[in-house]
Length: 160
Image 1: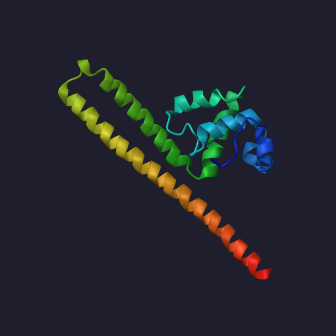
Image 2: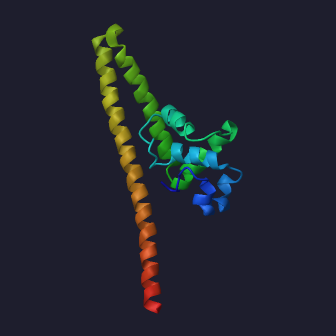
Image 3: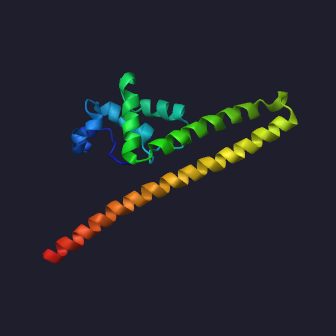
C-alpha cells in the first residue's frame, strides 16, 4: 500500500500526509477508509466495490460521505490508475450482473445462457488484462522510484 495503515492515527504513521493538498481536511478515519477502499494493494482489492466499501467502513468509526468521493478519486489519481480503476469497476459491475442472471438461468433460453457465458469469459479476460496493465504500471513506477534511490546512493557513496 502507498501508506502505512494501522490501528494508530494515520497522521502519526504517515507525517508527510499533512502536506498533500488533495487530502486537506481529511480525518484519520477517512484516510484509512480511502486507503483500504482505493489502494491497489489493499487487502480488499479483489472484492466488488460495494463489498470493499463495507469492509473498509468496518475499520473506521466514521466518515463524511459527502467528502469521500473526492478523496477516493484523488487517491486513485495519486496511484496513476484512476481511469483504469474506473474501467475495472465497470467490468466488475457487468460481471456481477451476468453472474446473477446465470444463477437464475432456469427461465433463460439455451442461446441466452450461451451468450451470457461467452460475455462472462470475454469480460473476465478484459478485467485480467486491465489488472495486468495496472500491475505493470505500478511495478514500473516502483522500479523507477527504487532505481532513483539507488542512483542517489551511488552518487552519495562516490562523494563520501
